[in-house]
Amino acid sequence: MRLLVQRVGRASVDIGGERISEIGAGLLVLVGVGTDDTAEDADYLAGKLVRLRIFDDEAGVMNRDVVQAGGEVLAVSQFTLMASTRRGNRPSYIGAAPEAVSKPLYEAFVRRVGELLGRPVPTGRFGADMQVELLNDGPVTIWMDSKNKE
Image 1 (cartoon, rainbow, N blue to C red):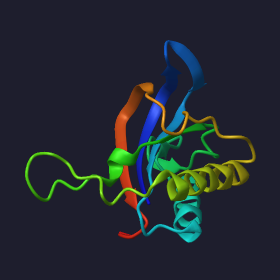
Image 2: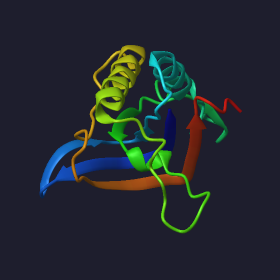
Image 3: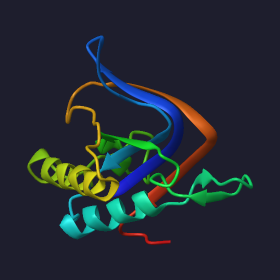
Image 4: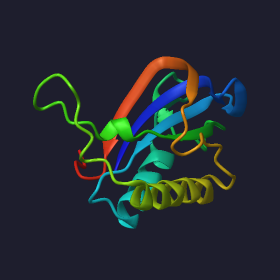
């Protein structure tokens, strides 16, 4: 499972011109599920995400997590995070899990993040053509991969 985490001043998701989700300051999280991902991957990344200290403290040092900063989380499914660009110029998505696997794991990830935050997590709509808007704060953008625990 892969996450692209962006610290934001605000973020929103629109579908067909209708706003379906939005947050103020916090984290926009793009979520990709691979063919070999499991519930353990979702749980691991949910915990890492919520504990990720990328918000400034009083001294201006990134030392607070999203809960300590009073931030929100918006999670959006994005199978293109599983793209392989190893060969040629057209990405291959063969590593992306099919919906029967990826949707339940994405939903488990969102549920677990909500449990850790103590509140529901707004989302996009799985499989939809979404327009995601954000104001990147910093900018701070972090890549996380449950198979590459750096």
